[in-house]
Image (cartoon, rainbow over all chains, first blue to last red; front, top):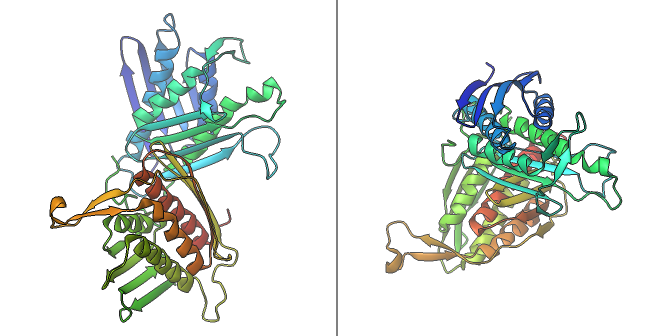
Length: 219
Length: 203
């Protein structure tokens, strides 16, 4: 039985209709007015094996913040609804790695994502050991501007909607890394987050009827 | 066939203990322990590792909480050692290894275990060291029912576990706030790492 959810949320600022299948094949169909997050969502769906169908509109004349934040929120709520009472899942997942050359054993991974469907929302997001930066960058595809801070808004919205605990880390790029390598960091983060979420959502064949918590409740 | 081990040390004061471990269990913890916080840690450990753990520890004399914490880790380690050995003492899982991260709010921990090790613990990171406040069931806190749990002694649990089990264990508190979360996240990470190792799946 595939685990699916659909949420339609309309506010004075945004209008989002999102459907997800956690047990999909990475098929993503998006009607999304902001290029960078659209590309990140395509990557997210493909990396996690999730099917995503999304139509969204927002008050971009104000800025990108409301749309991106609400997209994360609705995506998170879809996960929560699709997982239900969280019976029989692994609940905690992680993935570390990054694009580019395979790191040797002595070097740090570029990114790390850890998620626990604990039922309590909390996000820790860090880059280079410090706060996640807010920087204006331009999208590779069409040159449109976006703020990296909205990426944190997205994941803050996600953890709030999914009621999950996430730690997302970008590790400092080695000295002298070219700018193009740094631009791979955020896509790597969406890739890692998707894989961590997939791992956490996986059905546990050894305990299919158990809610994986000493509390007995994960919602 | 389920891999199990049992320990019965009822005739050895100042501690009487009964222990039973099933590596291929359903995550059932059945714990009787004088330190309520450690009981919670053991239940959590069983749940997250899908181990069945029955443990009754009843001190008959004066044992400091620190000593009890270390003893408990050693007992758990002994149970793992027994459950993981064939009759001829060869390991049931050759080269078994596992790892896991586990978060709890601001806290993030990591555990890596090698079953067939030298019994060493590598522990990185810090507890704040402020003790946790436990209340004895049935007693008023102000009526002699207050006991402090020395979280700072938690690494001694794992040191004794590594030593008695023969596992090599690496535990890290990567970041965090609050010793309850730091301690519990470590138990969860260790449980999942041990589960992976005992299932014999490659890393």
